[in-house]
Length: 598
Image (tube, rainbow, N blue to C red; front, side):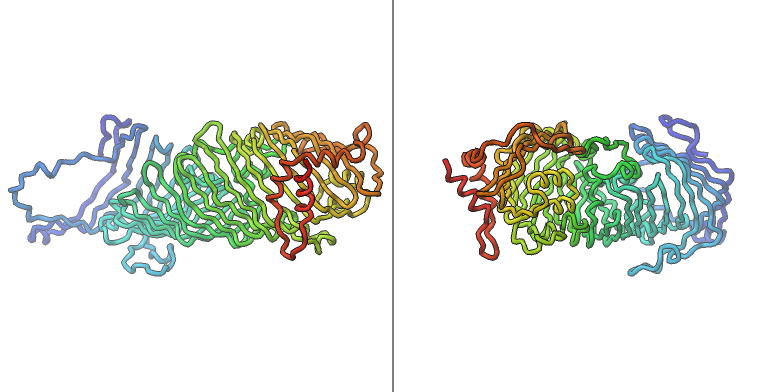
């Protein structure tokens, strides 16, 4: 029996019912104590670590420096060939890890070859010992239920730093599963690991409790790769997850990651590739997945039924536990026909609780969406900034199912710069300030187009303005100022074949309410059947459109009003893109006329 130190609760650290030792007598003649085998009957160990770091497995042994240097070295040596036991138990309590579990260890009865469990791998060492013991564990780790089983090598395999120690484990915590099979080098000093490592679970974010590695919320995932760890490096232990393959939701992932337990914060770095990314699998990153999906990954926040903007909070308190420098590339994005995304490329850095994505680049409808996103989680509330540029979105690719668009040479171009504060997408937009500018040239609008897009309010508005006709858009231009979550157009106009449509009012991101007025003015000899302005009110979730009381503004007033918006017109001219075919851009012509009217 071995007792606990005075500071550790409980009387006993190790107990044994019986110890049997065999000694080879003839070896004594050569001054060697040769012990062929030690039998331990039901060894039990109770290992504890307190919140202050004190534990009962660290011993202060006699200091060899105090020995007399003139004392001759002993001629005697001790050799142990084998240690066996019938059944062992380890109780482990660790206040710092919130761990409390019990492990039972039993002999396998017959040694199991390493290759039968771990599989034959390139570079396997023929000297890897067999598995000798099986084990089971049950309890709690980081406050979560923990259970698992596995196999390890024999006791003597632990003694050699040159022979890898075999280990295999299959552990579950909640719905998270971790499987490993491989070897531990220099086991008594925890020199390093060489393992096949598999992860699976409801969300990568749930791995933080098990591994200490901060990862984003995701749909259900699985990965399979090669883990190599060097546990005693000068800059901190190094873990490399090489050549992993897996899935997140319906998206494939592949890559290499490295985690260094450095100071003052550990760091995750590497590159991840997806050959086909399902865009919906990115929704949990900003809390835009469904309430059922939130429940499946363990998120307690639910999206209110009357809100559109995601209210789920970013866990900024955990952003400071590590740094990151990871590049992610998606070669192909699956999003259906509603938004033809082709590829994604981003470089994410996390430094002292500040996330920077620069660039964040999507291929969209033959053009590009380039953005820089900065989220400062060190501030409370979080501070956010986005700088976004849309260039050369081809209308015929944006709307491939619209027959009249297939011959269109029209484009969409835009810029947006916003800053805001808050710990969710909803809060960031509710407090946002900045500017949004958008241009569309050479497009069409019709009721059938609105139906294809699923826009019931748009369908109503187009029917009121143009009936069932398909109408060409020479230019659509918007210059919107956003202050404290309230978006107010400085200029919002559609120049069509039949009329000029002027939109005024505001959009409130804090309350998610719309208050817009739509005033059309016929062009030339064309006469509009509509006799009153239109309105769009209601919420983002349930918008409402109708006809305002009162007549339309007098003929020519809209054109005069548009003629005085010199500054917005000048700003929007920067978005005019030269046509590849050399045709004149309708927006450039119209905006230049506006700019010149003073």
